[in-house]
Length: 100
Ligand SMILES: [Zn+2]
Ligand SMILES: [Zn+2]
Image 1 (tube, rainbow, N blue to C red):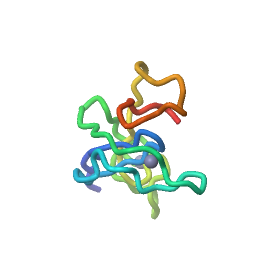
Image 2: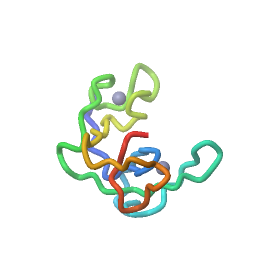
Image 3: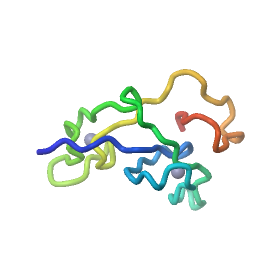
Image 4: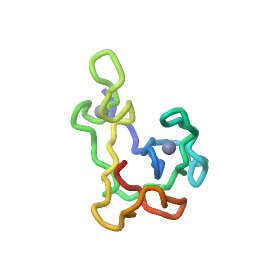
């Protein structure tokens, strides 16, 4: 099985991943709890931003299905330990990607 390339960006709010470069700085299309996600995709191109998914060995596949841990991307975003906002309600496009 081939390893997947790293995703290009992460949603600041729901932490969805995308491989589409054109999605960077765009609103996240996901719905969270019945509402449109307020996050935007921020580029995460650093090598240390990602770790290979140990569940699927970076293939995105687990058995016959999509790996639940990485949602089929083969990579997991490494959440920065520092510089996270205290208040999720104040999250905006300029804030870093933080744990939900
Ligand atoms: Zn989102
Ligand atoms: Zn995985």
